[in-house]
Length: 340
Image (tube, rainbow, N blue to C red; front, side):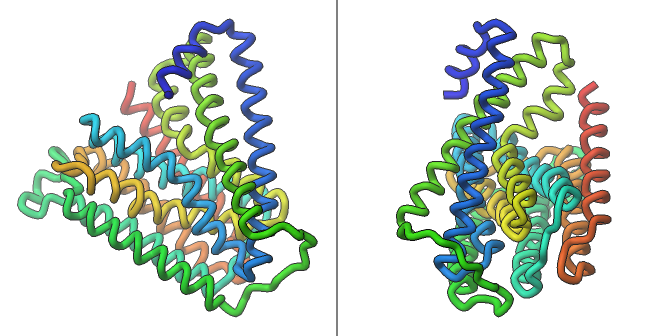
């Protein structure tokens, strides 16, 4: 499908491509507004916190396309791309998206829920790195890298089932910190879910078209391939999370934003990387650059966010946003320098 879209866009005049970009951004905004409204309405109707809705239903919706792309990449003989997609998404979600969210608005912390989810998030990150280590020859890890085996992938999928189950239990029992707000909405839960899925489809579809259009326009106006590879390609799969998080924060639903990012990070490990490795006989390749560049960047950003949640009282500190964005900027610069 991506090849068909790219082929169609490549034949269009530059002016038309810019119009498509503008239309794509408008549809992204429209989809994000619908998604946030329905996620908040759903959380109120079910008596579940917005953070929990963000960490489960919304994050599942935004990471499913990444899982599909990664699985297809692994099955078509590109296992390194599948793992890189998962790790790159965690870096972008945590560094860029969460960093921006903290700076443009308030991100309230539901203490009990956030501590639980953040522990799972950072544990998943470290588990991924440990699972990829070549324990039989650790001295070669920075040169030859390692591998996420098929067995490890199956274990990750089982952990995914456990994560979804415990999330359902937490949602049912509540955390004691959720305060329901009166929202006049007579629709059924099913109708809310249908509209929420429609909004996710709008966001994901328009994200693909917008990123492809921007990439073609950037190439036409002479932007170096190294810059495109280090920014647009890595950024593209995280665009649904970005518009959802920014819209949530701007509309005063910061809990939904942080829940979405933390949930997406956990799912990128257990769902995206896990399923991709589980369906691939040889597992997923983690080259030396994963251990010298990608894994360190991922863990640093996860630790920074965890510290921010720990020291924040009732909301994530602004300083956390600055540090996360600085880390992401360093990561981008490093990418560009390595590609050149």
